[in-house]
Amino acid sequence: MIFVSQLIGKQVNNPFFTDRQAIHAPGVVWEMDSKGGLSTAQAEALIDDLAAFGSPFIMFAGQGETLRDDLLHLISSARRRNMAAVLDLTSLPGAAGFGQQLRDAGASLVLIDADVPDAADFLAHCRAAGVPVGLRQQLVSPESVAHCLSLARQTGAAVAIFQHPATAESGRQTRDLMDEVYRAACQTSMMIATEGNRADAVFMYLRLRQDDPRPARELRTAIFRAETAQLHADMAYVNSDGAVFPEEHWRWGTVGNVREKPFSQIWTDPEQPLLRGLRLRRLLIQGRCRTCGYLEVCNGNQRARAKSTGDLWAEDPGCYLTDDEVESNKE
Image (cartoon, rainbow, N blue to C red; front, side):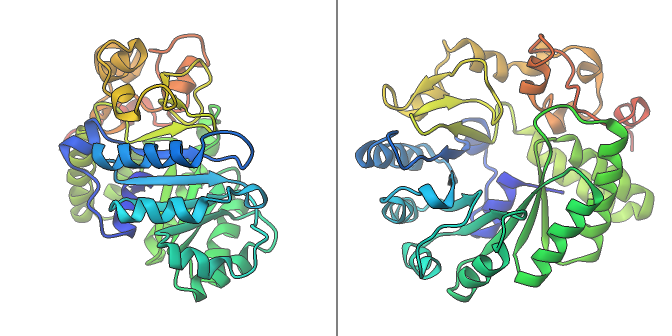
């Protein structure tokens, strides 16, 4: 199973996981807004800092109809600094010839929600211009999985990304949906990724172990090698005003603002209490996460889901693995 952060690195032939990147320099999702927010100079300073820090990518996230006027310039700036530059859209842009402009700017990948009307035409336009394209789909039903995969095949998408909801889902429903994703991954050469639940890597390994133990051993080695380095997080989030969040759905204050301090200094600040706790999470996490045989893989999963229960260090309510599975890390 490939997580979004690893996926982007592979998409641009840029190895993602080194000790420095995994521990200190995550990729950054920047939620853009055409009105207000960071100035062009502040955005360029953010990109310069991320590049010097070793961040492998920046994802420009926003609505197609409200894209910043300087977006193409900022994409070019990131690419000149050897960072992947990904555009993640929740609606279609209105500019004609936008795919060609993205190619000229050097965009590494364009993602769009699979439920956006006329997404297929937009992706075909980008792909014809030479820009790799992908689809993102909320993982909510078997129909949503089938729709995304059908659209991906129709448009020649390089990747389909299935995103778990922010809130804890029904364990049975999630397992059924992940079975759909697993079967799709086994039947296509397309990259398939999930986002928002690191238990997916364990589920995929255990599922594959039932079907074919030999490649399952290789997958196990891969997920432990990649995820053991994840002492912190592999993606961070910056909103349009420059506030920094440790997880996508974190809503309990920020860890800093890039208007006031460079991202690299915020992320490595040893005195920032939340980030310090997240670096030590394996010592603080409680419940069955603490004794899970795959803690090194998921790293306690999404702390925002745990925080929503009132306890930052509680077990993640979104983990859908059974008790037998979390104790099954035996070869």
